[in-house]
Length: 256
Image 1 (cartoon, rainbow, N blue to C red):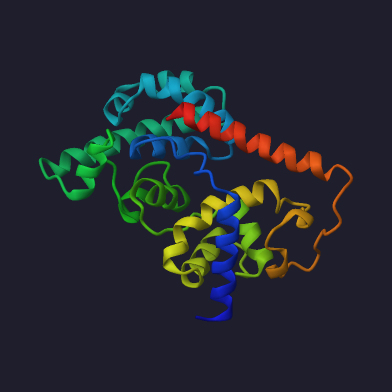
Image 2: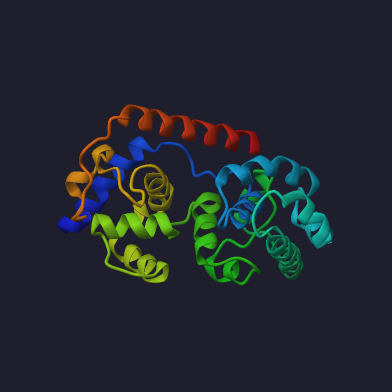
């Protein structure tokens, strides 16, 4: 095992011991997780979680969502940004899922059985078919592969992009290149951990002006402009992080 691999693995173990909660959009079965992640694009997780219970009551499965009008869907998500565009994507996604299910006919594989046992709706469980769905890119597909199917994948958003470059794991400028580099460097058994812990770490600690003074992996970080001096209100900042994470987890639990 190379020194880089050891550093990455050690860092992920430490961060996973701190950021223990599931990802904010892990809210239920594959259909529910997919909808949640699609709605979360450029939107605060809290806003999405608050609207999900009413959304899933109105549209509990792809069939109901596919039959709804864009206007009806929009009414349920109008509290978040780009809701009209997202409503259109959700309807087209649901229509495509229903069509995909129809093409499968009576075939039921083991993945579909597991989805059914969880009360879920059958959703494609591989990258190729997921990204073929309207409104679903590689990041959304990667999140779903991890959260709903337990498959190794690495979803790269702005947080993962920033944190992994600062840590020195990669030297990349686009999410696509970052994903490719991480898939090669991060041991496969840790792929499922990357997005979950680095999104939280990037949201609370490794922010634009990093709080290196509070970072548990700063000794392994290659960022050259570390902010190691804790501010006078450091205790208040850390308490606020715990409060925000607790609120987020409470909202996630209510959305399940």
